[in-house]
Length: 299
Image (cartoon, rainbow, N blue to C red; front, side, top):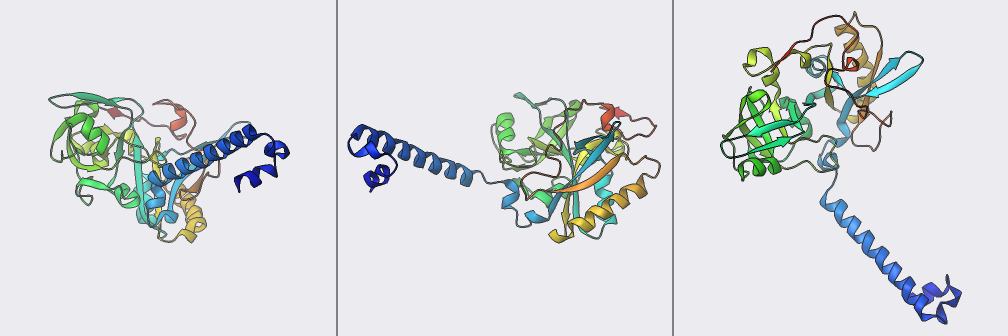
């Protein structure tokens, strides 16, 4: 059958067995490559694909209008956006926020130290929206209090040598001592959100006794990524329209430089093609809304 297959494409194959052998080898090599690729895709599925309600998850993005009709995409939003949408939009079942720290952070304990470039702050709603798989700890309480931190399995083993570390402490951002409240499975490489750990959002608030990151907790600084879990996927357009109304009501003094929209996570690509890829410095003016005021950050 193989000989008949190749003779239809290579007329000289019947008289030249070496060509048949070469072509057969190429076919087998291609089949092996396909099988390996299929196995890889099955072993590392998209994180969103594992979620039962993946089609209901949307990321809040925005267009930034610049002089000269230039329009830049960004996935950065104000820190107060998520809790406001959670209570002000009936289409929203949950609104989560995450902020990945823009600099490397050293983690330490009594025995060793490691460095991570993906220290992240997240609120409890993040666990509801994305449902990371907990290996240790209780997801209903793991991000409820200041000073809590959830580690990925890889980071837990690098820092402690084990994943059974709930209740252990570590030195984290700004030299503050955090308590491990959970260990989750590592995000897949296809996941929309990548992190090494999740520190509780309440740790960033002035009253926490940990940090006073006011630039993350106002309507001026655009440093946070916001995700919505809609009650039904078909409410995207309605939620998108209401989103703009809510933002305008909360920031009446800001010029209309931003046009917010929703990006479905369950679909490849997005409306801009490059949302969130622009490089921005830690205190870049592009991260601030056009309002006067002081943004204070204390470690």
